[in-house]
Length: 267
Image (cartoon, rainbow, N blue to C red; front, side, top):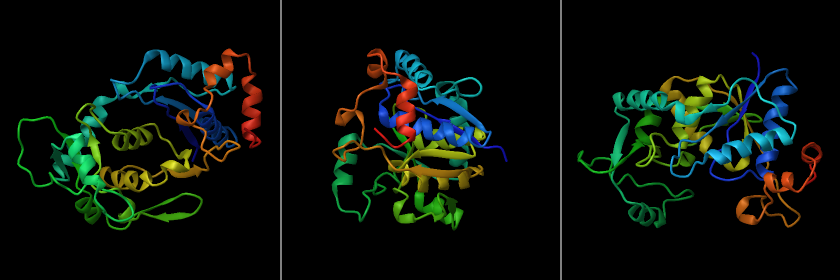
């Protein structure tokens, strides 16, 4: 099977070195195996996504010396695909409307629920009403339907009910699909065989594996890599003051040299 990987940033801000590290890893996994590397823009959040950030992402990747295959795919052009997946899950009676406000959810999640804070199912049996709502997956019912699940990630990983994050949101009040639904549907539609992403997303794979099973989607191999950290041991991210790629590019830094250092494990 030909290897297909992807890099799928959200255009809600500028890329930083952590993004570059992940994009390079995904790019190289494909290129080393004579496969395809795809670029997908996850712009489903219409309130935060900005066209100018899309242009910057493209410029940053080219500055790093990365190339991708085919046209760039935008999630905002794929809303009908997410709607169809939601309808399929509704027909299975696995979704329910959640009317909780952000404050109510925050209060519910502040209560002890074990190792992972999960939504306690407040609205699971609430009658339908004309009010803003998101759609949640009834995880217990979904897991009962799926049975035992696993995936490959540097070895076999068994899906863990305790890490499945409870009744996750699959369609938000302010967006037609959540990250969990959109990324799973898109990876399958684009034929992604290998998902290369940061270790911080390992836990959500339990959720994605359930969605794949429910929708009858193929299961890619996963390669969750360690996160890039600075000299202080802190993760290189925007909130920790990591430099943006655009700032480095505008300062005249050689992007290919940056990529070479990242490949060598040097920040």
